[in-house]
Length: 256
Image (cartoon, helix red, strand yellow):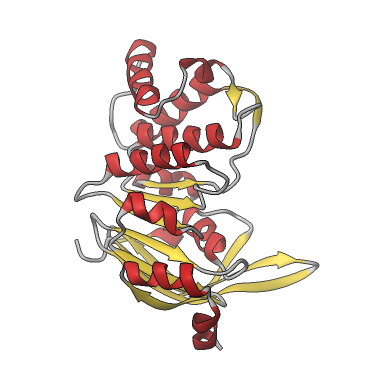
């Protein structure tokens, strides 16, 4: 399945300051099945917009281009349909949900996706066994399951909770929007391990990051540099090392 995810000439805008602002200006990107790709780029270049657009966030409007996911028109799907099809987005800043129990939230999400896929729902006993095994693998305390979603969580706990969701939902395409932001070395390793445990021939990931250190744990197949709303350079790990050493100046010249 060579065109697991294929983005062609994608343009998208968002309403800002009373008018429409175009952010994506012709993104072309292909991710084959089983590969992990990374997007790096300066702030404001469109990385998070691309993630939100793929996930179906409603305030981002696609004005041109196409996105094919496993042979289907991703842009024609509602956000819940994209999730059922296997798309997962880990946010840069996970939101807090006061009054929503974390374990109940996770079980509801898992069973919603299982229903959409024609799979049997997990009962409480099955889910508890599954989620405890997952929290243990992520070095999370079971106590976090009793708390409200992300309420009072540290930055690292919020990111681990995102990876816990990903582990339980078993997506075929995981999009991580700067999930490593604000993490210490130990938490960074745990997040990377969570992604690596899902790697398989039918799983792909798109990781958005500023940091070379995350790539040391992930060993990506391809690095893409984004600037001014489009992909301007693609290559191997040497691109990340060049960015770490020299910044984005030379790449920005290419985007002019």
